[in-house]
Image 1 (cartoon, rainbow, N blue to C red):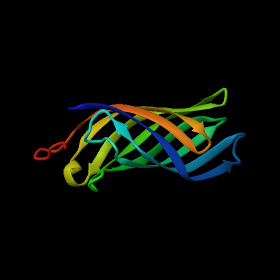
Image 2: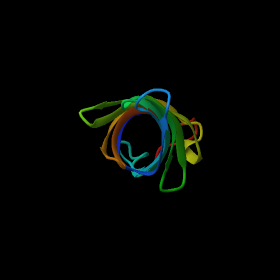
Image 3: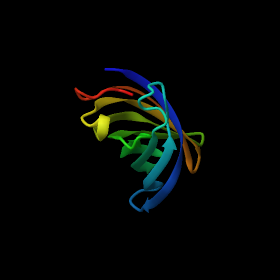
Image 4: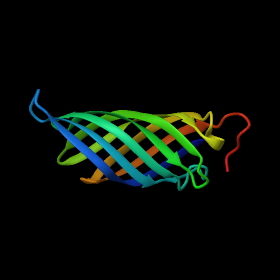
Length: 144
């Protein structure tokens, strides 16, 4: 399986926050992030990333899960899920966890793979995220 590393600086285009009344400082969020990714593997470089995630936080710490789609310049897509932990310390919000491919279209149909990610909020509407992992295209497809 080929290995890769990458990163992006993403913008939150949608953010919904619900203050839960069960315990102090408990919130749940739903967010959408858009970015163009840079990747060490040219097959994934310059793909347009869209991610949707939910978080469940108490005092800035908790869990997140979500979905992502990477649309490549030719229109093919790779899709997957992610889950991780959010921690807040000295005003810095950090996200880290794992991701995995679930499916794709075009040359990414049948893609498998997974990896790890780590990111941090650079403002209330932006995140910087890096990842690493490996993938396998289905038999009969080839990388660009």
